[in-house]
Image 1: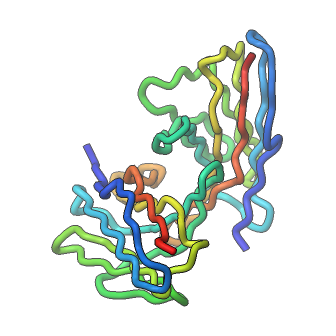
Image 2: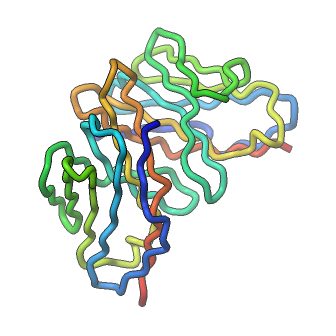
Length: 114
Length: 116
């Protein structure tokens, strides 16, 4: 059973600070890792993808991957009120010729302190 | 790029009727499309995976005769909820992925179904 674990939160961060979201996964063969943002009542939006160990930066977002520790994280710098949302970690196993389904974590709710 | 549309965005139907939801990839050809359901304050639940021209693969516990999926082309998949009941009321979301890009999935805006 493939599992993706996230702290459900809520994670409360002061506006302008760095938000750090963490995720662990159980399938060591996982190849692709994604972070989605989901506003209440809306569908998920892909914000970051990462495939190799290390950091990947895109604007205020940085994804970090450590396959040895089976750990992926998302940093959001200069947090804004618009960053308040649920962040979903998703992992693609890329194994056995499957349809490359994503396994999602349950999401971390991020809120801003004014 | 990577835009996925869904239609309708919201539908209300009477118990016992059927509802069809369309999912289209607008600017790319999708290798695979996925259908999810999400109840309020709960996680995404994958219902089925579909590839163009072949039968959908349903997740355990999802009734294939109730949730009919047709994937007629590389840009269009449809989900038909047959003989809908109030317990089928939910947020239905499709996604589409492309091979060669790490199989990133791009989500449609979702369809909110209410069965009365």
